[in-house]
Figure (cartoon, rainbow, N blue to C red):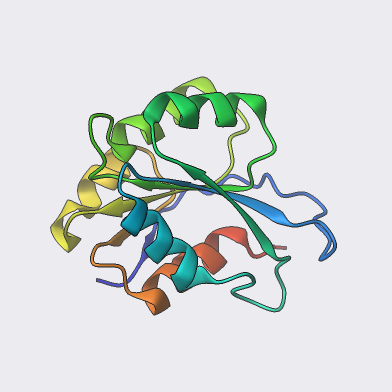
Length: 146
């Protein structure tokens, strides 16, 4: 499955310069999944974007804490994480943070994209992670739109 971007995309980046790293929160209870995401995207997945500064998070409560504190430009949430799945967290973040950053959910299989849409995520990519699909979805969420 290629990455799916859904219709609603928050415009929260404002005037980001290439000197200011984009803070990307990567949530999964599995360190291998977090590492796969970061390796797939690299430091700068597109020349029009600033470098990424990753924030690795292994628990649901820490995701909420970081997101409440602000300063995150993109959150990538593992829908298969336990005990708190990324889809439930995405829905909670959409309910509780009015100007939230874009949310991308990693699903367990392509057919779960509808669940990611239910969670109000802005995009979904299925596992196993395909670097091209993930990068394309992330660029679509972060690149400036006129």
